Every structure is written in structure tokens, then in C-alpha cells.
Image (cartoon, rainbow, N blue to C red; front, side):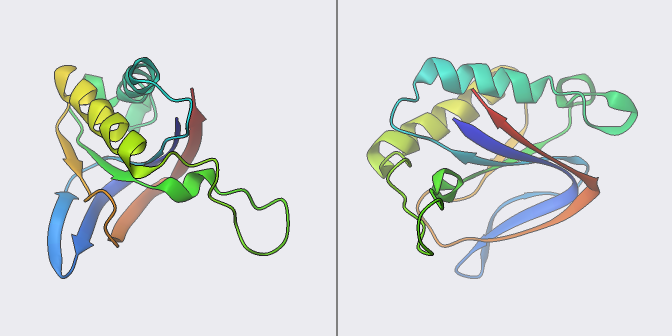
Length: 141
């Protein structure tokens, strides 16, 4: 799995004019992608790592301060742009594989005590955020 993690002051996901997920206080926006070889165990490992990641104010983690997370599925994180001008999506897991992994990632975070908001899998989403810092990390397991 691959994640782009951004420390945010606030973030929101809108689908068709409706807000489907939002955090209105400091936390993390997690753009999450899955590939063909990902497993529930990898989703759990990444969730735990992000939950304990010490990138909030005063080098604290979401787990320490109870900060919320907004998780948005994003298959484009597995774009292959090495050849030509049109990205290939062949490394991105198909929806029937990726959606359960994204759900498992969120369920794992909730099981750890996290407040998790989400986008809508497979939908065209408008994502807005206030990047705090800016702090942006790319993570893989």
C-alpha cells in the first residue's frame, strides 16, 4: 500500500455537492492507494504506522492527542509515468481488491481508537485541505 500523508488544519471531501467526510481540527489527510499484492496485514501495518506517526505539533502523533484522520482512496498513487505522456494504471489494484483493503485500513484505525472520516470509494471527489507546515510524507509498506 502507498499513502500520501498530509498534516492539516482542516480537510473536506465533497461528492456531488455533498460533504461526505470532513475534519475541522488539526489531524491527518491520508490519500491511500492499493496495488495487486497488498494484503489486510499490510493495511494493518500501515494504519498502525500512520496512527503513531509523530508529525503533529510538538512531535506528537494522532494516537497521543486524539487527532482525526480523513482517509481518501486514490488509485492514481500507483500511476506509472515512465513511458510516454499518458499514465498507466496497471499497478493499481482493481476496485474489487482495493475497496476492501481501504475499508480494512479504516477499520484498523478505528480499532486503535482513531476518529476516521472517509471519502467515497470510486467517486469523483473534490478534496480541499489546509496543509499545515506544509508537512507531506509518502509512505509505503
